[in-house]
Amino acid sequence: MQLFYCDNLPAEGIATLPREESHHCVRVLRMVSGDTLTVTDGCGLLCRATLLTPDERGCTIEVTERLPDPAPRPYSLHVAVAPTKNTARIEWFVEKAVEIGIDTITPLLCDHSERTTLKTDRLHKIALAAMKQSLHTILPAINEPTRATDFMAQQDAASQKFIAHCEGDERIPMQQICRRGGSVTVLIGPEGDFSPREIEAALAAGFKPVTFGTSRLRTETAALYATMLTSIINN
Image (cartoon, rainbow, N blue to C red; front, side):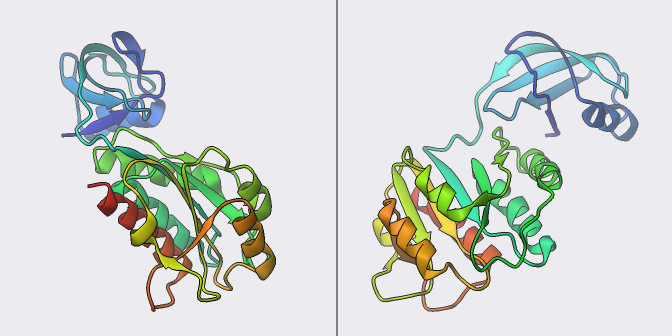
């Protein structure tokens, strides 16, 4: 199945595909009037539609049927991760995390961060491609980089909050305390780990310290591990 994205997709009626989606429909797939498409709005809505006008600048479609979500998730996941020095690594994480299932990604600016800028528009494009490839109906939000301590203080709504760091003996394996369902927020630090100040702020904000085992993981690996672990616990 080829999945298309349309952010203004209605549950019924007429819609117009974005320019890039329209170009792929007309120039790459060579679709013509009357062909059937499967379309999502990236917010959980999945529909079957008929191509009315095959225009590479903006294809007009008519929604004919609302479809059930093929892979509903009983949880929501927010991973806040420090951008890696090599941007290719954080881009790899975004792609793989979307394939597995994630709702929100926030780049964290930490005391030990080696990178403080990030092209979130590029991450959005990577997330969109991964969503369509994996046939998901949720396009994760890619937030702008946020100071770590500010982010920690803003996460009152999450039902489960974890910080993965490498200091001390108080950490518990995440799989032992992460429960099925609800909203999960996981903090992943930079290559130099969170600073003691940031760890203290996280604990004060209600984040539980967790470990992913005895191996010291790269930032992007730890972020993906948290994503996979949350998915496994909920399946």
